[in-house]
Structures are given as structure tokens and as C-alpha cells.
Image (cartoon, rainbow, N blue to C red; front, side, top):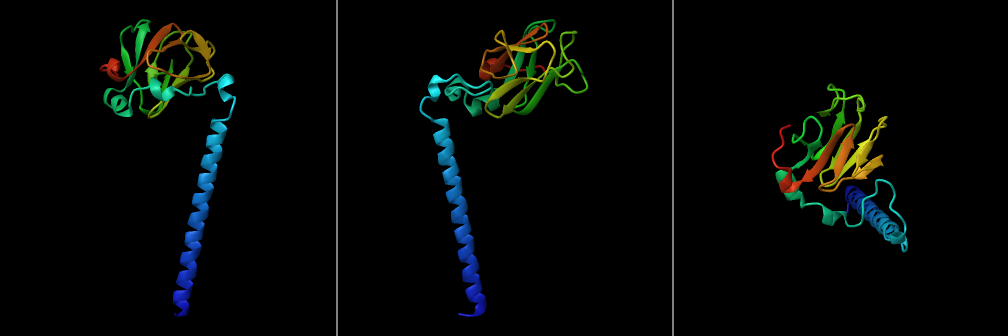
Length: 174
């Protein structure tokens, strides 16, 4: 064996050891996270604000169904009753009074310039109040952040939206 061959074997061994070390650390972190999520007694505690319920997977349609039909907000009460607004499947959809920065523009003095945003990771949708004066409400409860479920109502100012996912989302106008 030449010096180059020995150097190659040593470098290859170091790379293999580093990969094994990284994999081992990832596995330890995954096990630790699983233990943290499944701690005994967790079911007895109330969920943290904005935390996803354990059965969230059962509440949402399959990803293929969401991608085919999409997700929308339908105006239930307000001057645009019946109108539907398509939500981004990934990222943020902004709601507020300022037509230069929002995807869904509402009128009325009870709506802040950037009132709320709906965030999606491609599977789950969350509504966030962005520090508005008059608040954002989900099913009648004032929220700062809330997981959205099919059929939930979102109230912003005098406008009431219904969050729809899957076949009931229909064909949005925007």
C-alpha cells in the first residue's frame, strides 16, 4: 500500500465514523422528542395555546384531497356573503383593511390594517391574530393562535368566515 492508499482509507474511515455519529445523534434526539411528547400524565393537562390536538390527523382530509379541492374561507355574514377566498396551501394568507399588503381585504373601522393571517404548512391551517385592536375569534372565542378545523367560523370585525377544506370548498372566486 502506498501513502496515498493509506490516506484514502483513513479519510474514508473518518467519514464513515462521522456519518455514524450524526445518525446516532439524530436517533437520540428523535427518541428524546418522542419521550417528551408521550410523557405520562400529559393527557391530564390542558393543551398549550395554539397546540395541535392529538387527533388532528383524523380531523383533516387526506393531503391529496386538500391539494385537489383546496381550502377556502367562505363569507357567512357580511357584505360579501357567499364569496369564497382561496387560501395558500403553504405559507401565509393575510387578512386586513390595507389593500396593498393583504390577500383578503375587508372594509370597516373594526378591522385593523393587518388584522390576521392564516398559516399553512401544507397539511394544517392556523389562524393568528396579529395584534389587532378588536381581536380575531374562532367559533366565538377570542384567540391569539388557533388550529383551524373544517367548518370552523372565523370572525374579523363584522365579517364571519367559514373555513372549508376538501370537496365542500368548491370553486373559489379569488
